[in-house]
Length: 217
Image (cartoon, rainbow, N blue to C red; front, side):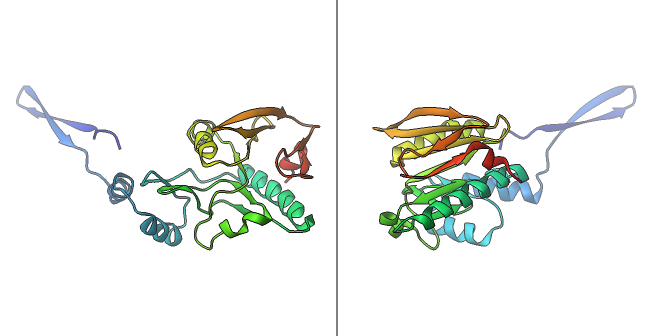
């Protein structure tokens, strides 16, 4: 939270005006938010909070982060992509696993994110946990104005450092899907896909979908 603002009250005393400064009184919600976000959390306490709450919550180097709640369009895209991946997973001789937010994913100790969509190949199903899962083989983030900077900046860098082979950024407002693959410790741009085009995953053999499928209600 920023520095408290001050409310000013002017009192008339005879012909003179006296300016009195009053500190802002914080609401219980503000006090609770500051307490939650300013302390350092261990993973077990974070998971206890995440399991009890009804909001999205991530752990960023021991600090609690509350992402904005998603819109209907955002969740429509998430469900459509997850459904396509689930159908793909079931078609494989050894099926993989799809998870969606708010499933916690541990990138490394004290760094837990909740990717919008994540996929685990069959050989990595041991990474899928009941409370928190490990590093997936594929992640996708659905962009929104409130998360654009985080999703295209810090989170993208974290996913690369965690070694996630493929990362999609889905922009519902521009109707674009941007595909990246991991090269070393950073992501290499494969391409941008628009309406009428088909996307082929680079690291999930045989998985593809039409861009327009993502926007279907």
